[in-house]
Image (cartoon, rainbow, N blue to C red; front, side, top):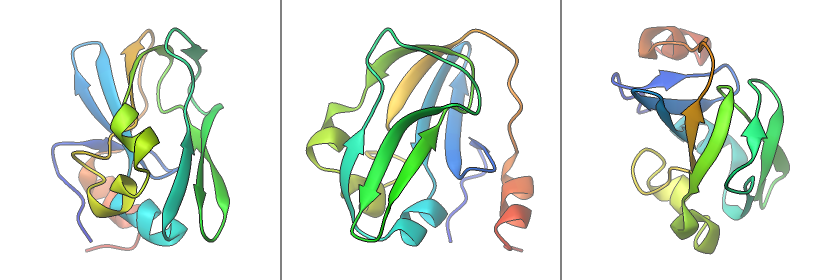
Length: 124
């Protein structure tokens, strides 16, 4: 299973790409596989303030509904409308087209590197 080394991760199976104080967030391929076919995504509104660990959205699949947890503190500055329109992007391209939101980070981050995430999911 793909775990891109340039990204950071959470124990809740989100990936985070940091660029200065801007974090792009999505769910990992591991999460997408566990969820099954994603059919609906509910994301926080642009301008929302979110706190690390708090539920900030939902991802619905043919199997279940799962919360999306905020990986960092900050303000939501952009949503990926393509994923809202076509949630299956989370299954087919989770690390590129399937990003969910961008957050202007306002506090310290506590994220896993790729090696730690691979260990979490039982990778090599």
